Amino acid sequence: MGSEGSRVVVPRNFRLLEELERGEKGIGDGTVSYGMDDVDDIYMQSWTGTIIGPPNSVHEGRIYQLKLLCGLDYPDNPPSVRFQTLINMTCVNQETGAVVPSLFPMLANWQREYTMEDILTKLRKEMMSPQNRKLAQPPEGNEEARLDQKGLVLKCCIV
Image 1: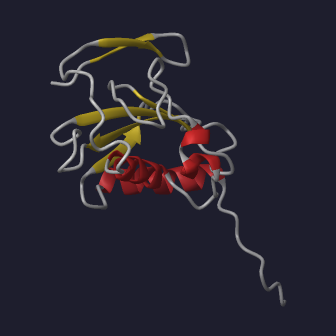
Image 2: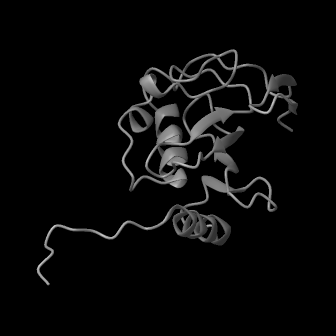
């Protein structure tokens, strides 16, 4: 019986269902939220996230929309994360809005226990870091077309 040190690995779909339930209940302080992008996606790959800009920073009062794509190897590997809303941050590719894993330690040093909520919360915290809190931001209300990973043009606008 003594299988000390062994741990139960929760299957991908159960893990994503747990995250979906947590996201739908709105657990947390309300500064980040997330949910499935397409309820018909049986693989639960496409998610949207929202971050409310932190106070006392250039991000205060802004609402940022993100796209998270969980591959079939999630949670063993991190999702790809992309801002749909224009943002200027040191860890974000300015042309695509993609969060660059090598510039965002949580993605670079991914652990299976991390969640999409953890990513969004850490990105919000990164907005408050000295290198990002005062960076000039694109004007609010500007529309920007970005290609998503399926090749569709997405239009985004902060209202």
